[in-house]
Amino acid sequence: MDNILHTFNGEAFTYAHAFLEFSYLLAAILFVYGLKLLSHPETARKGNIWAASGMILAMITTLFLHEDDGGSRIGFTNVIVIIVTLGIGGAIGLVISKRVKMTAMPELVSFFNATGGAASALVGLLEYGNPGNESLLVTLLGLIIGSIAFSGSMIAYGKLSGKVGNISAGFMKYVNIVLLIGITALTVYILLQPEPHKYASLVYLLLAVSLLYGILFVMPIGGADMPVVISLLNSLTGIAAAMAGFIYHNLAMILGGILVGAAGSILTLLMCKAMNRSLWNVLLGGFGGGGVASGEEGGTIKEITLSDASILLAYSQKVVIIPGYGLAVAQAQHNAHELEKLLEGKGVQVKYGIHPVAGRMPGHMNVLLAEADVSYDKLVEMDEINKEMSATDVVIVIGANDVVNPAANETPGSPIYGMPIINAVEAKNVIVMKRGMGKGYAGIENPLFFRDNTRMLFGNAKDSIQKLISEINTL
Image (tube, rainbow, N blue to C red):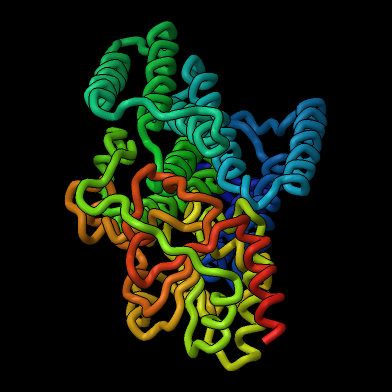
């Protein structure tokens, strides 16, 4: 009796249980505070630390203070196994984080997202046959959503790393509709059975169909639409984690999953808006397959020499740099920052125009430039920078293609028609840095390259910027 604190709603609460519940409340506060800090690049690092601290607190208190319905805590052997497993996983994660290149960050995000989905799916699969499990609907939902998040994220990882190609999106939307109907019907059928726990074979079938849907709904998606998919899959992983939390009655898992799911859902809607796509299109996998824009194609390109480009930049009043995935590939963010400082030393105002889906994951360019110590107030979002385009002397497009493609505004037949873009074409002069005349990630022609105010500067972005810096220093 000396271990009993008090009785609340008919349940005996021990000191350990009370402290565990308080730790979950504190963890939730840390999650929310960390999430708020993550909303701005300048405080994002601190936000990660605060949110991670909340999760570490919840993990430690659960490991040592959690009690089952019989009042028993986790056995010593299991604690050792869990700690060793965490140590191995942490060591692997540390090695990966040290070695991963910034260009591979989208693939890494997709891979980590897949592991979260797999964990939630395994929880649903293991707990389905537990006779004491009273949350059968939640268990099946966790299994379905976690499986879709796992297989979909692995396909996204393969596509981002160039290991998996696209398949035609024309018929895939109908296949995906059939699979969604099948998943729903199978779930309802299992739930309506008098003894649903005995239908393990149907649950394995549900797992297989869910995994297949995750693969097929991501497979047709390509081009600049990938950030939408990454955001959606991240949201699904959070929802699946919340389902696992409901199964185990763990408040920390529920709150953490809900926060991730909600944040991912909001970001998904913002990405859909930025790509001019509906969420229903995302779910059906019926967009982003690339294609050829109708209307203005081809023409004569005009090159610019390093000498002419350096004079044009050095004697401008306002320059806007628009980064894209090519900047990441060339690892040219530090060189871009050096060019920015050099031009500012000559009295030129320099800003960066950031499209919300530039790169291959949400916020890719912000992370890249922050790594190079570019001031956050110089990173201007698309809507704001578009207001300044007509008054800009020179726009430097570094490795970006789809996010500055005027076909989005001018060519109804284009796959990206209606997508909000940075209106680089409105600037007085445009310098496009590219390795060649290859099409962008969406696989369509860019009429900007053939406009009268556009000049091409071919070569590796990092080398080209460094040569520009050397030329400007001689002026």
